[in-house]
Amino acid sequence: MSKTFVTGLFKTRAAAEAAVDAVIKRGYTRDDISVLMSDSTKNKEFAVQTRSHAADGLGVGGAIGGTVGAVLAAIAAVGTAIAIPGLGLVVAGPIAAALAGAGAGGATGGLIGMLIGTGIPEHRAKVYETGVRGGGILLGIETKTSEEVDKLETLLEDIGAEYVRAE
Image 1 (cartoon, rainbow, N blue to C red):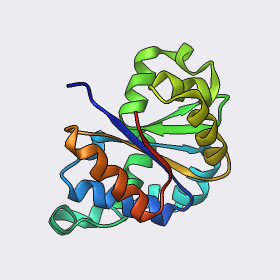
Image 2 (cartoon, rainbow, N blue to C red; image 1 turned 180 degrees about the horizontal axis):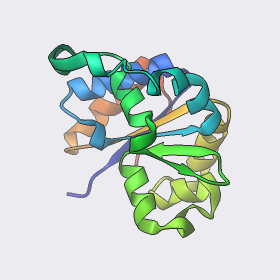
Image 3 (cartoon, rainbow, N blue to C red; image 1 turned 30 degrees about the vertical axis):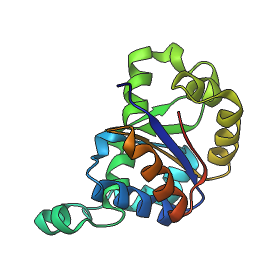
């Protein structure tokens, strides 16, 4: 079965963090989750946290109980994300791996071209680009089974994602 990618755009860090937390509670890992945001959003929302030791103290309690925000901050941290020069974007997760595999040429089409390259239709890529440029955070989850697609779409919508779709 080919994997399906469920995407949704969040207007706030809090909503994106709640979504990541809920997806992880469904058995996914941060390796299944892609995050895309502008450099300015990353710098504004994560600058303090990525330079602190906030995640260090989570230990076993965090692994068992899940700490909202810790995973999103870890995904957005400099070491696990790639910055795309000229586009002002930070990308992490499976999308980042795909882009790294495509080389620098994969990003020359801008954000819209990059999203289309991951299988997102052009009209939706344009909507996502506008949202990301406006400070939103785009999440994408690679589903484990076809049965998970509807469940993840509902989960993202319930937490407040806009433009939720499966590709």
